Image (tube, rainbow, N blue to C red; front, side, top):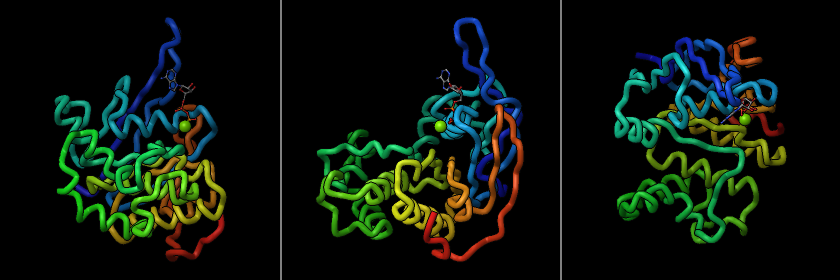
Length: 239
Ligand code: ADP
Ligand code: MG
Protein backbone atom coordinates (compact mmCIF):
# COMPACT_ATOMS: atom_id res chain seq x y z
CA UNK A 1 0.00 0.00 0.00
CA UNK A 2 1.88 3.00 -1.29
CA UNK A 3 -0.76 5.68 -1.13
CA UNK A 4 -1.41 7.91 1.85
CA UNK A 5 -4.66 9.07 0.35
CA UNK A 6 -7.01 7.74 -2.30
CA UNK A 7 -10.05 9.65 -3.40
CA UNK A 8 -12.67 7.83 -5.41
CA UNK A 9 -15.61 9.58 -7.12
CA UNK A 10 -15.77 12.25 -4.45
CA UNK A 11 -18.75 14.61 -4.53
CA UNK A 12 -19.62 17.47 -2.22
CA UNK A 13 -22.66 19.70 -2.46
CA UNK A 14 -23.94 22.43 -0.22
CA UNK A 15 -27.61 23.35 -0.14
CA UNK A 16 -28.82 26.93 -0.26
CA UNK A 17 -32.42 26.34 0.75
CA UNK A 18 -33.50 23.75 -1.79
CA UNK A 19 -30.88 24.69 -4.34
CA UNK A 20 -27.93 22.33 -4.64
CA UNK A 21 -24.50 23.93 -5.10
CA UNK A 22 -22.12 21.29 -6.36
CA UNK A 23 -18.64 22.14 -5.13
CA UNK A 24 -16.66 18.96 -5.86
CA UNK A 25 -17.70 16.97 -8.88
CA UNK A 26 -16.70 13.33 -9.02
CA UNK A 27 -13.04 13.83 -8.09
CA UNK A 28 -10.69 10.85 -8.18
CA UNK A 29 -6.96 10.95 -7.49
CA UNK A 30 -4.38 9.47 -5.19
CA UNK A 31 -1.49 10.88 -3.22
CA UNK A 32 1.56 8.69 -2.83
CA UNK A 33 3.09 8.19 0.58
CA UNK A 34 5.87 10.71 1.21
CA UNK A 35 4.92 12.98 -1.68
CA UNK A 36 4.26 16.72 -1.59
CA UNK A 37 1.22 17.86 -3.57
CA UNK A 38 0.07 21.43 -4.19
CA UNK A 39 -3.53 22.21 -5.05
CA UNK A 40 -4.21 25.43 -6.96
CA UNK A 41 -7.30 27.02 -8.43
CA UNK A 42 -9.47 30.15 -8.35
CA UNK A 43 -11.17 31.31 -5.14
CA UNK A 44 -14.34 29.40 -4.44
CA UNK A 45 -13.39 26.36 -6.55
CA UNK A 46 -13.52 23.98 -3.59
CA UNK A 47 -9.91 23.74 -2.39
CA UNK A 48 -10.63 24.25 1.30
CA UNK A 49 -13.70 22.02 1.07
CA UNK A 50 -11.48 19.26 -0.33
CA UNK A 51 -8.89 19.63 2.44
CA UNK A 52 -11.59 19.56 5.13
CA UNK A 53 -12.98 16.34 3.67
CA UNK A 54 -9.49 14.80 3.60
CA UNK A 55 -8.97 15.74 7.24
CA UNK A 56 -12.35 14.37 8.30
CA UNK A 57 -13.56 17.85 9.31
CA UNK A 58 -16.59 17.50 7.03
CA UNK A 59 -18.33 14.60 5.25
CA UNK A 60 -18.65 14.10 1.49
CA UNK A 61 -22.05 13.93 -0.20
CA UNK A 62 -20.85 10.72 -1.86
CA UNK A 63 -17.65 8.93 -2.76
CA UNK A 64 -14.78 7.43 -0.82
CA UNK A 65 -11.75 8.81 0.98
CA UNK A 66 -9.17 6.20 1.90
CA UNK A 67 -6.51 7.35 4.35
CA UNK A 68 -3.67 4.90 4.96
CA UNK A 69 -5.83 2.08 3.66
CA UNK A 70 -8.88 2.95 5.79
CA UNK A 71 -12.12 4.16 4.26
CA UNK A 72 -12.84 7.09 6.60
CA UNK A 73 -16.54 7.01 5.73
CA UNK A 74 -16.74 3.57 7.34
CA UNK A 75 -14.97 4.47 10.58
CA UNK A 76 -16.90 4.61 13.85
CA UNK A 77 -16.95 7.99 15.60
CA UNK A 78 -14.15 7.12 18.02
CA UNK A 79 -11.99 5.68 15.21
CA UNK A 80 -12.58 8.82 13.19
CA UNK A 81 -11.57 11.04 16.10
CA UNK A 82 -8.38 9.00 16.45
CA UNK A 83 -7.72 9.24 12.71
CA UNK A 84 -8.08 13.02 12.84
CA UNK A 85 -5.54 13.21 15.61
CA UNK A 86 -3.06 10.53 14.59
CA UNK A 87 -3.07 10.46 10.80
CA UNK A 88 -3.46 14.09 9.79
CA UNK A 89 -2.19 17.45 11.03
CA UNK A 90 -3.77 20.72 9.89
CA UNK A 91 -2.16 24.11 9.22
CA UNK A 92 -4.39 27.05 8.30
CA UNK A 93 -3.71 30.43 6.69
CA UNK A 94 -4.39 32.18 9.97
CA UNK A 95 -2.38 30.36 12.56
CA UNK A 96 -5.04 30.33 15.33
CA UNK A 97 -2.49 30.80 18.10
CA UNK A 98 -3.71 31.85 21.54
CA UNK A 99 -2.15 35.30 22.15
CA UNK A 100 -1.56 35.03 25.87
CA UNK A 101 -0.14 31.51 25.90
CA UNK A 102 3.59 30.84 25.50
CA UNK A 103 5.07 29.28 22.36
CA UNK A 104 5.43 26.02 24.28
CA UNK A 105 1.82 25.98 25.48
CA UNK A 106 0.52 26.90 22.05
CA UNK A 107 2.30 23.87 20.60
CA UNK A 108 1.01 21.66 23.42
CA UNK A 109 -2.53 23.07 23.19
CA UNK A 110 -4.12 19.89 21.73
CA UNK A 111 -2.81 17.95 24.74
CA UNK A 112 -3.82 20.62 27.24
CA UNK A 113 -7.35 20.72 25.75
CA UNK A 114 -7.46 16.94 25.90
CA UNK A 115 -6.71 17.09 29.63
CA UNK A 116 -3.64 14.90 29.20
CA UNK A 117 -0.28 15.33 30.88
CA UNK A 118 2.12 17.55 28.94
CA UNK A 119 5.02 15.83 30.72
CA UNK A 120 4.63 12.83 28.41
CA UNK A 121 5.36 15.10 25.46
CA UNK A 122 8.60 16.71 26.69
CA UNK A 123 10.77 14.85 24.16
CA UNK A 124 8.48 15.55 21.21
CA UNK A 125 8.29 19.20 22.24
CA UNK A 126 12.06 19.57 22.36
CA UNK A 127 12.49 17.92 18.95
CA UNK A 128 9.78 20.08 17.42
CA UNK A 129 11.17 23.32 18.90
CA UNK A 130 14.61 22.42 17.49
CA UNK A 131 13.09 21.66 14.10
CA UNK A 132 11.34 25.04 13.87
CA UNK A 133 14.43 26.74 15.33
CA UNK A 134 12.48 28.44 18.09
CA UNK A 135 13.90 26.73 21.20
CA UNK A 136 15.16 30.11 22.40
CA UNK A 137 11.60 31.52 22.17
CA UNK A 138 9.99 28.75 24.21
CA UNK A 139 8.48 31.09 26.79
CA UNK A 140 7.69 34.04 24.49
CA UNK A 141 4.12 34.85 23.53
CA UNK A 142 3.05 34.95 19.86
CA UNK A 143 2.89 38.77 19.72
CA UNK A 144 6.64 38.90 20.42
CA UNK A 145 7.27 36.90 17.24
CA UNK A 146 7.23 37.63 13.50
CA UNK A 147 4.44 36.34 11.26
CA UNK A 148 6.75 33.63 9.93
CA UNK A 149 7.75 32.51 13.42
CA UNK A 150 4.06 32.38 14.41
CA UNK A 151 3.25 30.21 11.42
CA UNK A 152 6.18 27.91 12.32
CA UNK A 153 4.48 27.36 15.69
CA UNK A 154 1.27 26.42 13.89
CA UNK A 155 3.25 23.89 11.83
CA UNK A 156 4.85 22.58 15.03
CA UNK A 157 1.43 22.08 16.60
CA UNK A 158 0.31 20.10 13.56
CA UNK A 159 3.35 17.82 14.03
CA UNK A 160 2.76 17.13 17.72
CA UNK A 161 1.07 13.74 17.35
CA UNK A 162 3.51 12.80 14.58
CA UNK A 163 0.87 12.45 11.88
CA UNK A 164 1.93 10.96 8.60
CA UNK A 165 -0.01 13.52 6.57
CA UNK A 166 0.07 17.31 6.84
CA UNK A 167 -2.78 19.29 5.26
CA UNK A 168 -2.04 22.99 4.87
CA UNK A 169 -4.65 25.49 3.66
CA UNK A 170 -2.88 28.53 2.18
CA UNK A 171 -0.13 28.31 4.81
CA UNK A 172 1.81 31.27 3.38
CA UNK A 173 -1.20 33.28 2.18
CA UNK A 174 -0.75 35.79 4.96
CA UNK A 175 3.04 36.08 4.89
CA UNK A 176 5.57 38.22 3.03
CA UNK A 177 7.84 36.39 0.60
CA UNK A 178 10.79 35.99 2.98
CA UNK A 179 8.68 34.49 5.76
CA UNK A 180 6.79 32.46 3.16
CA UNK A 181 10.05 30.95 1.93
CA UNK A 182 10.99 29.97 5.50
CA UNK A 183 7.71 28.12 5.92
CA UNK A 184 8.07 26.38 2.55
CA UNK A 185 11.60 25.28 3.48
CA UNK A 186 10.21 23.89 6.72
CA UNK A 187 7.55 21.93 4.83
CA UNK A 188 10.18 20.70 2.41
CA UNK A 189 12.40 19.35 5.17
CA UNK A 190 9.42 17.75 6.94
CA UNK A 191 8.64 16.08 3.62
CA UNK A 192 12.16 15.04 2.65
CA UNK A 193 13.76 14.28 5.98
CA UNK A 194 10.79 12.80 7.82
CA UNK A 195 8.94 11.39 4.82
CA UNK A 196 5.65 13.09 5.70
CA UNK A 197 3.02 13.37 2.99
CA UNK A 198 2.13 17.03 2.48
CA UNK A 199 -0.83 18.54 0.69
CA UNK A 200 -0.90 22.31 0.49
CA UNK A 201 -3.47 24.64 -1.04
CA UNK A 202 -1.74 27.68 -2.48
CA UNK A 203 -2.11 30.67 -4.76
CA UNK A 204 1.68 30.91 -5.17
CA UNK A 205 3.01 29.13 -8.24
CA UNK A 206 6.56 29.50 -6.85
CA UNK A 207 5.64 27.67 -3.65
CA UNK A 208 4.65 24.60 -5.67
CA UNK A 209 8.34 24.16 -6.57
CA UNK A 210 9.01 22.98 -3.02
CA UNK A 211 6.76 20.00 -3.75
CA UNK A 212 6.62 17.34 -6.41
CA UNK A 213 3.22 17.60 -8.07
CA UNK A 214 0.44 20.08 -8.72
CA UNK A 215 -3.29 19.68 -9.25
CA UNK A 216 -5.30 22.55 -10.74
CA UNK A 217 -8.94 22.52 -9.69
CA UNK A 218 -11.62 24.40 -11.58
CA UNK A 219 -15.37 24.25 -11.07
CA UNK A 220 -14.97 21.23 -8.82
CA UNK A 221 -13.04 19.09 -11.30
CA UNK A 222 -9.34 18.48 -11.93
CA UNK A 223 -8.35 20.71 -14.80
CA UNK A 224 -4.74 19.50 -14.92
CA UNK A 225 -2.32 17.39 -12.95
CA UNK A 226 1.43 17.51 -13.37
CA UNK A 227 4.57 16.11 -11.80
CA UNK A 228 7.51 18.45 -11.13
CA UNK A 229 11.23 17.80 -11.36
CA UNK A 230 12.73 17.58 -7.90
CA UNK A 231 14.85 20.56 -6.89
CA UNK A 232 17.46 20.81 -4.15
CA UNK A 233 16.61 21.86 -0.63
CA UNK A 234 16.91 25.56 0.00
CA UNK A 235 17.55 26.39 -3.64
CA UNK A 236 14.45 28.49 -3.81
CA UNK A 237 14.73 31.38 -1.43
CA UNK A 238 12.25 33.83 -2.87
CA UNK A 239 8.58 33.37 -3.66
P1 ADP B 1 -11.74 27.77 -2.02
O1 ADP B 1 -11.05 27.27 -0.79
O2 ADP B 1 -11.27 27.10 -3.28
O3 ADP B 1 -11.69 29.25 -2.16
P2 ADP B 1 -14.11 26.73 -0.72
O4 ADP B 1 -13.85 25.27 -0.67
O5 ADP B 1 -13.95 27.49 0.53
O6 ADP B 1 -13.30 27.39 -1.92
O7 ADP B 1 -15.62 26.96 -1.20
C1 ADP B 1 -16.12 26.39 -2.39
C2 ADP B 1 -17.58 26.80 -2.57
O8 ADP B 1 -18.36 26.16 -1.59
C3 ADP B 1 -17.82 28.29 -2.45
O9 ADP B 1 -18.78 28.65 -3.40
C4 ADP B 1 -18.36 28.44 -1.06
O10 ADP B 1 -19.23 29.53 -0.98
C5 ADP B 1 -19.10 27.13 -0.86
N1 ADP B 1 -19.11 26.69 0.55
C6 ADP B 1 -18.03 26.34 1.28
N2 ADP B 1 -18.38 25.97 2.52
C7 ADP B 1 -19.73 26.09 2.57
C8 ADP B 1 -20.71 25.86 3.58
N3 ADP B 1 -20.36 25.40 4.80
N4 ADP B 1 -22.01 26.10 3.27
C9 ADP B 1 -22.36 26.54 2.05
N5 ADP B 1 -21.51 26.77 1.05
C10 ADP B 1 -20.19 26.55 1.30
MG1 MG C 1 -10.02 28.27 0.72
